[in-house]
Length: 534
Image (cartoon, rainbow, N blue to C red; front, side, top):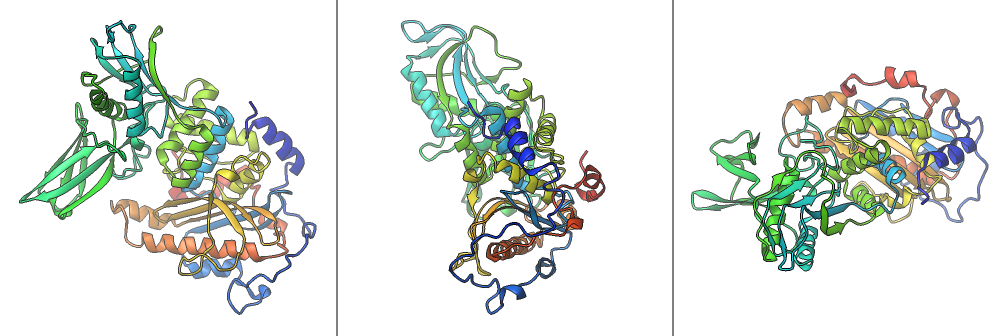
């Protein structure tokens, strides 16, 4: 099987074609001319001629974001860099990291890889449908397994003829290392920061709903899907007589123990909470689904260590192929998917992922060896702001990735919009990219096809480390000013893209800007202290 982002292809067709300094030294003259479009492009600002368009520094100053705005723009065919600023300053990429994780997983696992969840038995099936032994629900690292798919697996178990199990019911998530949460610095109740395991369900989130009934509340916690709503025992909620904090969490002996402030509930509502016991959660729900098929199972217990030899497969469920899983991840920016893809890629390449920190380090090394890119990754999703990569190094990654062409079709189309957020009436280029958002961090990286048909790779990283540090101290899910700041950052990105898309002959930057191939020393020395890793 040919892998779309192999190291051989990366080095052979990328570095050999561009030269080792193609992205580190800007050309001295404009790249060869191309035919101009047969229509006049509308100006970026109505009434202004192209030469009167605002310069990048003016756009950035007008946005008023503070901190650092780093950007780079390069021709994907030649590698020539045409615009850049603060492009050698490492910044937290946020969810733009998922584009790199996609490349890593495609290389190590292949685009057709499927994750398999199995039901295994320690004994064979008798003629009367009895398994005189234990039943094991074994995960294979599938990040997208949901309740409907788990229901299909229960139906397949029934179709295999299983009617009774005399032994224990166990769950196993040892295909990937367990992590209690992706980023410990995040608030406990955020559904996008769940535990990670080799056996996952519903992105490791449980649905919490409440409704006022008289002077009290009716509380439900379930693993719902579009068709069923199995309630769970492994997560419990207590309404506490307080106003703040809104939520508290405790890792109980046999369940996730939550409390919620009565003063924050109102009459009714719901939200998804993270699960810290993903294998047990999947087993809890599967037990209910198996009961609907007439199979009574005991409450699940978790199996430690490796699976023993000689187990018998009774039923299985396979995920969609990896390239589809990755495309969904890039569209919906699911953190759990990124971590499972990254951990699985490391396990495939090294035999054992060991931990999230180890796997992130392995991905850092892989990217450096494959593309000569300097970076530091603390996870695979971008949730941690201990990760750092510069806009220039991100563009270097994108230019090389374009040689195989595997990434761009998986990226989300980004519409170009006006000040009101409405799609522009006249085209100013086509953009396929990955967004990234944390409080006071906004990133965007991908590809833009200009009006004249030139394909460019770009990265725009905006971050205000001081405001981010203050927001983390506030313990507020949406700290004051964060929404406004991120909105202005996204508007700045739009204006920059629209300027690039309209320019019919993009002039290269001057050599002293050193936009994309910053030496290793600058990656360390220019690192903002707020983003320093461990």
